[in-house]
Amino acid sequence: MKRVIVIGAGLAGSEAAWRLAETGIPVVLFEMRPKKTTPAHTTDLFGELVCSNTLGGIDETTARGLLKSEMEILNSLILEAAKKTAVPAGGALAVNRNDFAAYITEKITGHPLIEVVREEVTEIPENEIVVVATGPLTSDAFSKYLTEYLGEKALSFYDAIAPIIYADTIDYTKCFWGSRYGKGGNDYLNCPMTEEEYERFYDALIKAEKVPLKEFEKEAYFEGCMPIEEMAKRGKETLLFGPLKPVGLTDPRTGKRPFAVVQLRKENREGTLLNMVGFQTKLTYPAQKKVFRLIPGLENVEFARYGSIHRNTFINSPRLLLPTLQLKKKPGVLFAGQITGVEGYPESAASGIIAGINASKLFNGKEPVVPPPTTMIGGLLKYITETDPDRFQPMNANFGLLPPVRAKGKRVRRKIQAEKALKDMKKWAGNAL
Ligand SMILES: Cc1cc2nc3c(=O)[nH]c(=O)nc-3n(C[C@H](O)[C@H](O)[C@H](O)COP(=O)(O)OP(=O)(O)OC[C@H]3O[C@@H](n4cnc5c(N)ncnc54)[C@H](O)[C@@H]3O)c2cc1C
Image 1 (cartoon, rainbow, N blue to C red):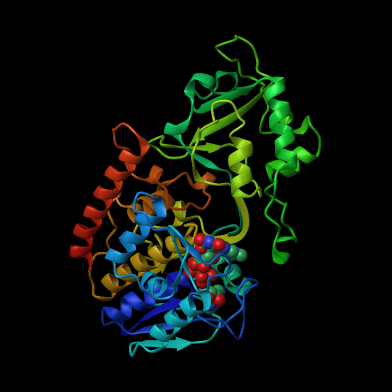
Image 2: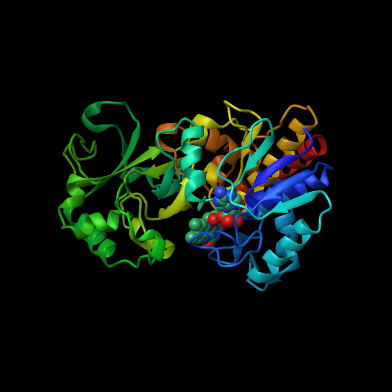
């Protein structure tokens, strides 16, 4: 092997290429822009932020704050660029997007070990170590090729994300565990509603503010993923025959079937995260908080991930990838960024660092590595590669991905988790880098 090939110079690909080159390994980095562009990118710069200009909170007791501190330990190029080009944004790390992308582009193109090729890749080269980081808007030709290459019937071209809430913020006195008709044990947490509670929820839902669709999201948008608010618009009864149907459920407190029921299902093995079944939505984040907190038992819940529906090409990582980000059937091919099912700017970049580290391990004939599951990056990789492949949807950084700790008060628990994560990441980085 004389070099490593990285496909896509977005957040993940730039991190991977940088990591490899900094380790002394020659890299060929393919980027199709500006010859061919995506529906959301507008420049030819690397690491272009296609929407908001923030990489999230700085405080280490927030999930993204912790994630960024871990990236810093791993010498992240994206974080370096963000700090150099930051604009005032209170407790968040926001950047001047043009300066940010220009900084990354300059660093990458100026690196003596990185050769940049401005071409669309339509096939994965054989007998090479390759990092695929073509993002949520992977070109059509390459997406089509990947579907066959991976032996999949189809890739996912839209995500349909239902909100996920922290289990320890639910009021369990108002809910009950159980499955419809008693089949399946206590797999679901049921939040029963009276007719009055349902009416209040329904009215708020249909009036709530939505995120406007991007032009390229309009066609085929509703094919496989009807947002709950769109379903509700079809009539007051529709949800009662859909995600809020009460059939087969008896509220043990009344001995009767409730008027409506919202069901939550465990999102991870530890049960620290619960998914709101059938609640994929395009409501704005503040609207989700307001409307979904009208559900009995959820009045004070905190959201680990809000619901969303985007144009988003991603592979079935739990089926296809090892936690090292290597393809199970071709371990010389690694995936990184949003295409693996991590969701968000820092999450995509962080996975790029790990893919870069592991591509360099393979290049040097060493064993690839995985950060400990007590770290935010380790927890995220564990989730995307170990969750149920039949229900896989993208995931962002959140504290439910870390092993739970026992302590009174959420802030105290987060602090303990964050301290452990940073300690473990420092130790791991000392060995891995
Ligand atoms: C419209 C939209 C808005 C988003 N908004 C946000 C947001 O506000 N906040 C947030 O945290 N996350 C957001 N995301 C999610 C995600 O974090 C970003 O898309 C992020 O840029 C993903 O990083 P990446 O490196 O995986 O992909 P990208 O940054 O998209 O990089 C992929 C690169 O690969 C190139 N490429 C694609 N196909 C090929 C090919 N065949 N050959 C060569 N090059 C190719 C592309 O041109 C691109 O430069 C958004 C996603 C989308 C689609």
